[in-house]
Length: 184
Image 1 (cartoon, rainbow, N blue to C red):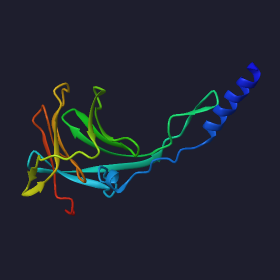
Image 2: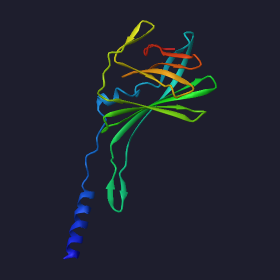
Image 3: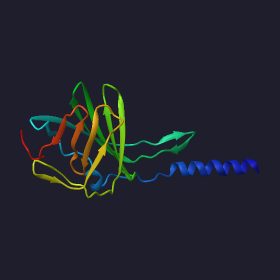
Image 4: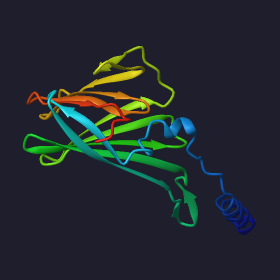
């Protein structure tokens, strides 16, 4: 009887591990949080200098983990965009990460020399009444984040479709996004 029960349990586990759930795919709304359509962005540094920042956007699919013949994890699609700025004696990376099945957007900020990072999260369906203007261009639905635990980055403003539109360092360096249709 015990052998029969064991065989039924093993067969059931094998059956469930072979059944695959359809992976979640990135939606058009998910893609609006990333910077996939840009190779580079232009920022105004301290109101005088124009800085060209390369944009790196990557897409992929998670793979299942297998533990003792049982599938764990997921195989959902994801995407992330990365921009990296040179500031003072350091550099700061902003990485926007989105997973198709997750309801949150993850913004990771890495202070590269000191190896410090800060994490910020938004719900993908978040909206905001906060607006921010740069050079007479009004950005709507903005999110303002402060970073009191970091020694470099003081605050930044993030907007859907545009990414980081402004950030300020504790060394009083100010970076503001220039109009995206600007050719230089």
